Image (cartoon, rainbow, N blue to C red; front, side, top):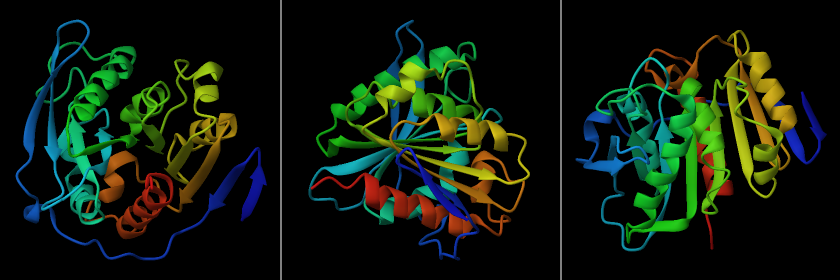
Length: 243
């Protein structure tokens, strides 16, 4: 079923199979990154560069779920690198190697410091950045993208509709794009639909016939893993490539 309103497209489908390009054990050694937040908290991440890149490339910033850390994204990193995207995975405040107290509002503000670090990298194309978040990390993936001019698109996997995501924030995304991904029997389905309906720019929503949540979508055991990976790569190719 496909319908259109407010320059948005609603997609309800099970995407076609897709073969993941590489396995996590073929990953290049990442650069360990430390960035200091506004309150002095030292945040930790891993930066994966596309091997043998000869020019600045678009870059994808990945933010994890409530239950884990930056390693939740390991299955998605090889396809992103092979598609020509540098990748930065981060531990949100209060998770993994980033200490401090867990805070949604703090995690949103922290995103700007990760963007500052990316802008300082000569091999990063600063006007072609994307934010991808799963579950808890989907909120800062949207709210952190909005004030960053170089962030052209945000991909939200199993997001919750938090009050911090207000109309002013959605309005700031009017000239950019958002992709929503969620399982039909996931308990955040209606939250995701409400968020989709509030978008002001280009948006798409894909609903899978499953209850899979957040970064669990990319586990080997998930039969929809390949189609979800293919969808993300297709979206980035359409919305992040800047000539």
